[in-house]
Amino acid sequence: MSFNVDAVTLTLIAVLVALIIGILAYLSAAKAKAARAKRHATLIRNTIIDYFRRSGVEVSADATSFDNSGRYTAIVESEPMKRFRLSHIIEMTLREHVRKSCGLELDKIYWRFPIKDATQAVTVPRDGEAKPAENGAAEQKPEEHADDYINEGLENYRHIPKPEVTELSWETFEQFATLSRENKDQQPGQ
Image (tube, rainbow, N blue to C red):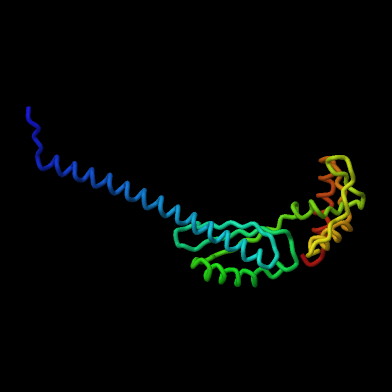
């Protein structure tokens, strides 16, 4: 029995092989592009961390590209510091530094200043009493930091009066709502 192959069958096989090769090439290119984007993001991250380390500030950073334009978005996280009040000025110099160091463009920079990490060392209770640590001992006095920006804010926070919240019945709520509507209707000029 001989194997007869006509022109149509050969054409279909050639198209199928070309399609498979095209799909494999596309997948390979996409994988290489993702690896390059990951490598660029890591390079930007390390450049940002080094940029702030030179000025004596420890930050954590990350970068990612949301589209395939080659422009990256960076996320910088640091303890709250007074020197970051004018972060838009720092952003300009940081963008320029990344462009010169890596040859990559930073499109956006998002800042995050988590207070939880900063307040672990500097805890100012609202009621002025020493807050016990988990091991039962009283917490130590706040350590001296190079930048007391968070201490200033927490000191002001301590003097804010605590709100008092009570539960009301539905009837009491309706009574207040009715009074409020009546007072609003009685105001002149409306």
